Length: 533
Image (cartoon, rainbow, N blue to C red; front, side, top):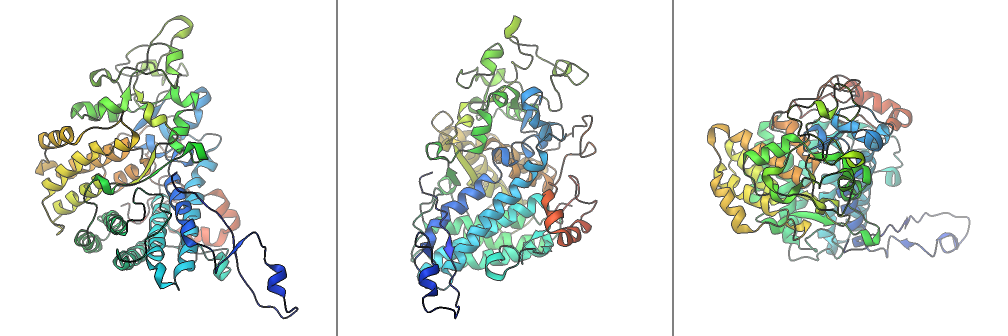
């Protein structure tokens, strides 16, 4: 990361009458007091935790990436932890994985709440305070989208109000509050005011870009509500469009990982693990979609490894990137020799290599090398996503400026160009992207399908798996056939939420039970939260 992450503790000062110099002798001289601590130092910690919450083994790659058929895995041997994703089957560490989004994003929200407290009475830091609120919205919305009802109104207040067992608020009330707080915070951002000095996003403190981020986040949250409160969705989508959402890929929100200083991209770390290099492939659903649409991204994102087991397990040996030669791995197969062995899959292409160097999955496409980069970007929200949401809003009759077709064309081009932060090997030029978008316009009769399949592909290719899953839950696109593998935990249905961390039942049992009682079928993988109808 370009910015240093600090986790300095703050000292609360209390008044006691037992000694005249209590504060002097009881203040740790190695820690900063609230009066002198620079709240800017918290911002990159917030951003990093939030971006990391849905990356790598924190859950996204082990759950949602394969639930919505972006990736696939044979999930055998050393890589059996991918059974959570590809086959909806418990692995030895599932309970740990399912808690990671909760723990990491609540950590981000907690830092953001602290940053708000440090700045709320300092008018000169009003921009930083409002960014703190925006990041709380970003983090808490993500947690609620993954789990449903969560601690909200009483959350983050262990220090300020000694609330250690917070009640769970309904997702409906949470979303109303999030959108209201976001509206106030974004409106109050002032480009003429003092900018943050430790911004780890690609914005480097530019308040104009932060305003666009805030309004783009507002649009995303508004569109979550299309099935449960279309009036509210329309109100906030139109407000976001009027306020000014992202205007180009230069506004994309992402954070660059920094392996040299210990901040690894979780997806890159996972896919550079030998077992993952070998067994994690692009799903047949994704490769088929890209090939059917002659998408130029296919020539950048996928490779068929060189023949043989050694090459398939190599992190460095390049494969064949010819688009026509790519073959996606069908989800739900294994290497166990039975009925679900990959060799029994329809249109199985056969093994690669020979003798002791043979591998049965060698001809299936895997992600190319830039996805294995531990210093690769982690994407938060992009111009392509925003334009696709505006295209859908326009299709629904919302007044968001421009036509659905125009927004869609911009989105398709932007999605292609958004790979560029992964490096020169991933970049596709604007001329190529614009030409492709012009040749693949929106078809009115199938607009919602087109828009949301493109959303799935665009977020999926940027490895924003949780967002692809959330939008699939909301729209039903792309249409997916679930996997019904023996012993699965979801009754053969694609999971629609992550169960709460197991510690909640133990440490916050009364409030946990109240939340579980509001779920459609209990604390499991298929209960639907409020907006997921």
